Image 1 (tube, rainbow, N blue to C red):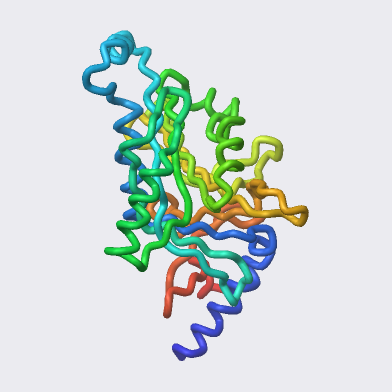
Image 2 (tube, rainbow, N blue to C red; image 1 turned 180 degrees about the horizontal axis):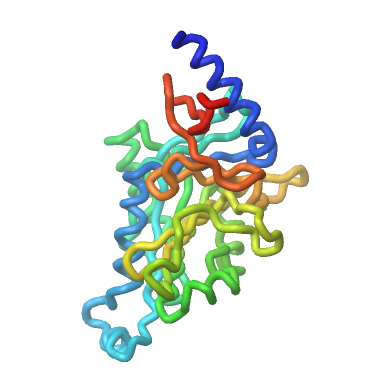
Length: 274
């Protein structure tokens, strides 16, 4: 019976997600430890002015403090799934760069700091490879609706230029933080494409914490047929973040709820009823 159930689950998952897997060439899995590593410094730098900065303290008192950008490195592994043919990136940890420089609207990476951390991980945690970088977009004086309407959770022109110059960075996560309008203003899940009503953007998740709205966007860069280092389209990237979305996967019809059976296989909640 168990063998039959596993075979049924595999066949159902294949038929349900085939179309989505054709679109999403990259699966980025953000593990819970990495979510903690990202959110703690992102929200702190967005909400709390730095000690010793008189200007920032005055801005905070006048409710004009926008926040500071922070950033750092992503650690984990990248492989190609033999079943779906997609590249799978497991983001297991994230480290903040203390020697890099961030302002309210920019972040400059320190390559020297990155190299030091790379050597440290190679010596102590060789199972974790440097797989990319991250930085934040703080908009604490901007409403959630304004951030969405102006696509401020997307990479800026300066971000794109920095990504192109890096050459070896394959994954970039952008964590955007802003104020919510109300308590129930944000429901956790993937955001919709701005140009296509009802379609999901599988590369970005949105959720709320207290009075804060948070977007996490996964950007993937690769060399195209002409040898140019370019960002691939958002619908080709699927950001899987169970800590935020739970066992929910985007499909052409919207979001579907799944449960795990056997060796980590996913089936729809109503699979037994069909």
